[in-house]
Image (cartoon, rainbow, N blue to C red; front, side, top):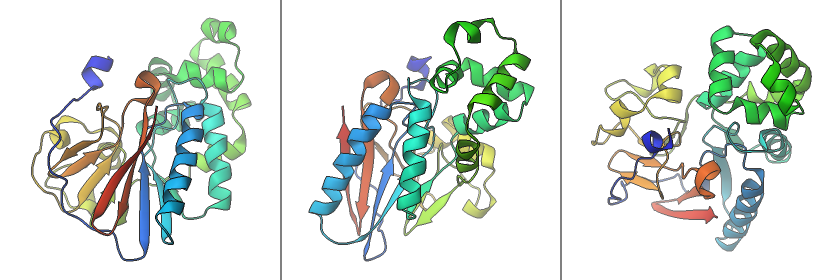
Length: 253
């Protein structure tokens, strides 16, 4: 499965774009339950931000905080607390959060898909016993999940956005549908799209910063910048920094 997700494309010249004066943005790629890496990346971003001098700094989390890695509940709690003290922090709803919220609502399709793509690790991180999980049917699992996941976590995830525009950049989880205006994009495409967007190859309405598809390092193309470096499988968690016309990488491994 990882081989299908891993898109090692040749890095090209950074697409030209700018962030409004006085602002600085850090876009953080898919975390997937890797809380130890997240803690280190947040510290690295804080040090980088301080070294660059005063600015109005926004952290944008590109989605997929959960699943696959060992500590999804801790990731959600850490970022919930961060958002409480840093209201300039913004979050995009990834396809894994979409499945998780559907599973919490008892939707049969969401439950099945959630269990296939790393939901077991998320359930265990919320205190569901691993052996008990393996014995549960979907109805039992839905009941256990609703019991174990704190209401404040569910409410926090439900506030996540579909799309964020800052200057010449648009931030989404997976990508956009080429040929469709940003204000007409379907949420399903924003959270799930792959090849029609990845293979487009030409400039779009805005430069798209996204996660969802793993690359070895930043995946820089004429129309997009991919920031998912596969934290749960590679041990690398990455953020893209943007200020004015400059861009840079903050990464922990």
